[in-house]
Amino acid sequence: MIVVTGSVTARENSFQEVRRLSLEHVHRSRNEQGCISHAVHGDCENPLRLVFIEQWTDRATLVAHFAVPASRDFVRALQPLAAASPAIDIYQATRVEKL
Image 1 (cartoon, rainbow, N blue to C red):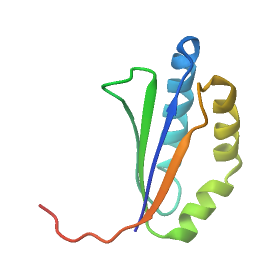
Image 2: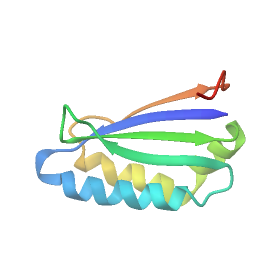
Image 3: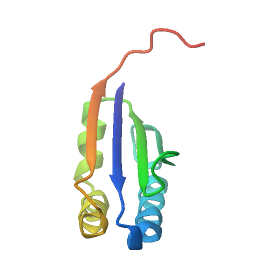
Image 4: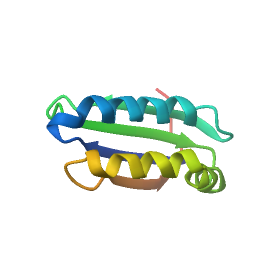
């Protein structure tokens, strides 16, 4: 399984648009082949920061997700609304135990 974490911090005057775009992206992405989960959360310590947590079946499905035109459009739309460059980390994960 592939786990993706990411975040974006909105400019103060653009948070609502960043939130709208992020929710639209998450809802669309959940329907893609290989998507196990895709969510966006608010940062409790920074109200302008949104955090993404994604799970994909494998690297190929994540690569396909990044190639979807709407995914690229989402990233481009965020750039002028963000206070800094969005962050993203990708991990190869194996579940050790389910508690």
